[in-house]
Length: 157
Length: 157
DNA sequence: TCCAAATATTTTAGTTCTAAAGTAATTGGG
DNA sequence: CCCAATTACTTTAGAACTAAAATATTTGGA
Image (tube, rainbow over all chains, first blue to last red):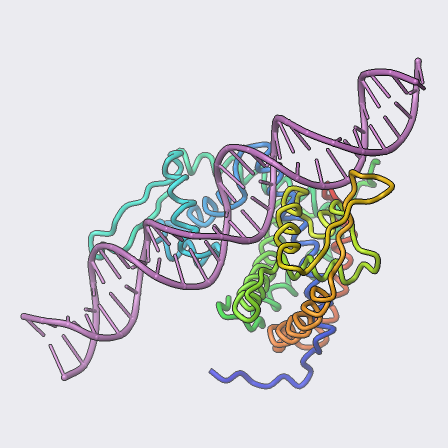
């Protein structure tokens, strides 16, 4: 589990600076998306994220898989999915093989809802990033992938 | 208020890709910091952010200024600061000139607490980013500043 | 086989957060 | 000077979130 020492490791000051520079635009975009989802669809960003995760997975997801992908606790997913089940967006069924497990699947209504929202989501982001030159966007997309791979956090990836 | 058209504007697909690449590492680092603040100091990340904002401002901050800097609603700041007042970290005093305004200031205990936490915060971030080559970190720091300036959100900056 | 440990999820208690409505103080055009 | 609009903040109702404890099921070694 030992990781190789990094001779060019950045110091605390530079690390804090990078973190603040990374955090602020991300928080602004997140807030903008949250507000727009609420205003246009009356839906939380978390719900959209859950729908997106389920849409990407072709055979549904276990509660625990959802919690991993959304980067939130199990308890949070329990409540989020309960409300989404109540609203007919997803189903939650116990596994036959292992009755501790619950698989969550999109309903037809959930998938249709997601399709509409995903279009708006992409349009909003294109608008939010419209002033960023394509070259800068491509470079950032590359560099943030590198960043993600190099992160030393409890739950990597 | 019209902004110049961007001839090289990225499309929805690229915008979503950039967003996801930006969001994931940021969320992972945020979660890591949140967990560590909770574990080591029994304190929320929001509290640390509030302390940091107040420490940076030399003459205290109005409730509204805090809500701008922390990117949260006024109502949220009301509750957060109430709890911090109760714990002796900050004071909250009405302005003489305009009794609608409330200025929040660090107490000596609050400033001392912040100083200790800020050191840990910097150390943790240096550790989290330790595998990122210094060159990549510097480049990301630059590029995210550019990103912030180019963002088209309701509340810019 | 049995039962202790591990696994998957839910529950609990409480903080953080939002949107929207409410309160109180200030400001400025008529 | 006045009062309608604005500003600063709080309150409310409820969703989103966490850490920790609880529940239920499965697994694996003695």
